[in-house]
Amino acid sequence: MRSMKRFGTDALATPANFITLGRLLLAIPTLFLIERDGSTWLTWGLWFFLCATDSVDGWMARRDGTTRSGAFLDPIADKVLTLGGFLALVSRGDVWWLPVALMAARELWISIYRVVAGKKGISLPAAQLGKFKAFFQMLTVGGFVWPVTADIEWLTVGLLWFSVALTIVSGVDIVRRGYQEAKA
Image 1 (cartoon, rainbow, N blue to C red):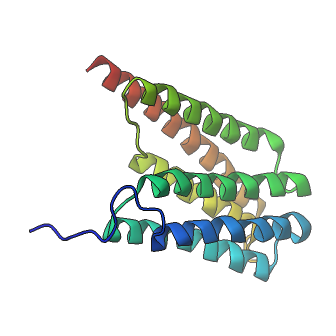
Image 2: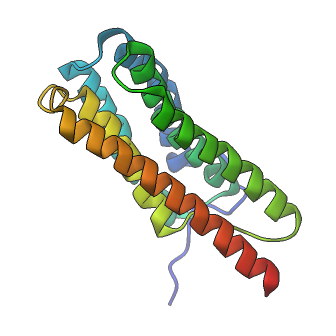
């Protein structure tokens, strides 16, 4: 027997959406702290909290019922957090602009691609590879702001380029899935 979900797909005021909106609001001061202070325990603590709540709002949405508003807001919160974190690190001079530009270009391209595919009736929800990408992007920014790892250049730069690779591979995967669905 299927369990009853508390919220339908059109619901707006859900616990998961409130957490997502809170993540968006708390991201702003956290990104300013990254840009201003870089690697500090406060910055890392806020970053860790924001990243951990990404899993919490996803779990709550699956438990209570996913909504269109949540499906729209959660990826925006993830992109604001990750790309904002990377841009703050670029602004500080801690990260080279090229890997961040590659990730930002992929995010823009895939967002446009999903809209175009959606107009053709093709749905391209996040796959497991995209979730790994988001996790490693968050982990990478975390590595740059965690005082324990911030000065371990081989680790932070390695994570950065691994995140870039995952970002590109997951983008190619989305295009491949769209192409296969269009052919079907």
